[in-house]
Length: 289
Image (cartoon, rainbow, N blue to C red; front, side):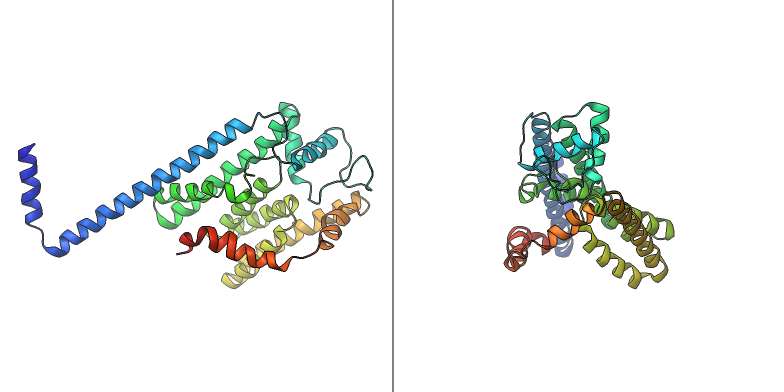
């Protein structure tokens, strides 16, 4: 041991000041990476533990879960979702993809809140995978990829603890990330068309995805006109055709519930400010730096 310490002292004594500073900087960076990685693992582990504890809970965790269960039950019974409002049933104001995917899972595993939550859990894990792939491609570091996943897991409280609930949100986020990843991280026409197809699914999960499609289409056209056009045309055709089919097959009720009713909601402009000052700057300001 004493010989090893003497060897270290001799090597350090042979370093000049700048070399020592570089070595110290590398050591500090290593410690910072290890600390960030440890926090990432902690947040992911906590989230997975919450998923495991709540997935089999037999009752509603959040008030919309029971309503979503009713939507899936109607699909399994062959009943339409978008119908004239009645005392028996009034649909939520969302497109049908999450309900359809959940009905497929429920048909295979049996209808329960667990089968609906599994869709959201798998979608959240898919978001982890997309974030890890994006960060690793941009940084070339698996450690930073793990940290990116951990940061996303740490936003679980900011979402209202909704990552694993029987709601449309986690599937929406996963598809939004996947479509953006395909469009931004790859070259070529195939990935642009694939991204446009995925964003059709984004819209069919939650209609607010239309805003993301518009912004990304403008960016894609400015970045590469042909590729951006391929993305935009695919998305417009997919969204337009699916909307026309849904409107026609529901005698217009799909349009009423998904577009007319939401646009009649009052707009609280102070919430827009609160989003940036509270949700963004108030909680993730350190990340912006």
